[in-house]
Image 1 (cartoon, rainbow, N blue to C red):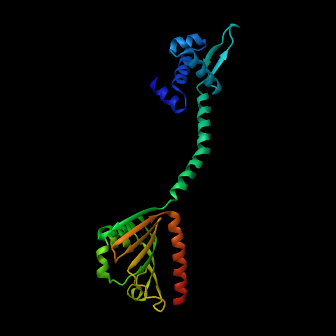
Image 2: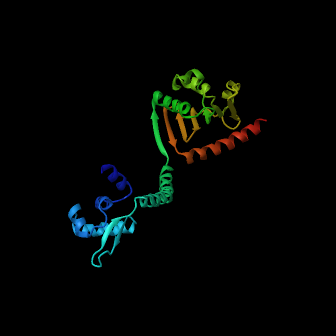
Image 3: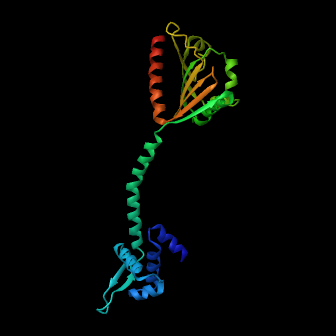
Length: 249
């Protein structure tokens, strides 16, 4: 009987409803006193369960002898109707629950990372989380040369970057652009030196659903995980990148 109980429980029947329904399937046309005696539920509990089963179409009663009602279980096919009702209810309510989840999921998740090894974690997450052919956007306001910056890059960074053919849109300073303008996967533009040297030693990276900021002076980095926030930052970056490219042409 356990396999039947498990099914009926999943369909929302209470223990008393399950026991009475299964009893009436095996022994149809029983009066209330028979059900009380065989199932050992108190009479009020039996009446309550029978009312619920009748409302669900799983039990019917007949007035056979003109004195008492006799109860019997209907065809188990009616359980499919109950299942369909539950499915319809789930189809209606699950999107509402998803909307609640999505609303709460919009809150950004902030993570702060310190020291060289933790800043390496940001770069590692960048190349491991993006898909093949993915793109990321980076502000590089650096005055450090490659050798000085290398300590912040994990060993597997460049191999993964190349094997995944990751594309980079970069806004940097004129010196950095001159040093890194020969990579087909890098679209780099420069802040005009007449406006600013752009050498604050800070990098901002927009990738996937994250925005990461790295301060190389204090060796502190932090990430904000939020699809909405990342798309907001991406729009601003793409607008500035496009304007700077037009200025260079």
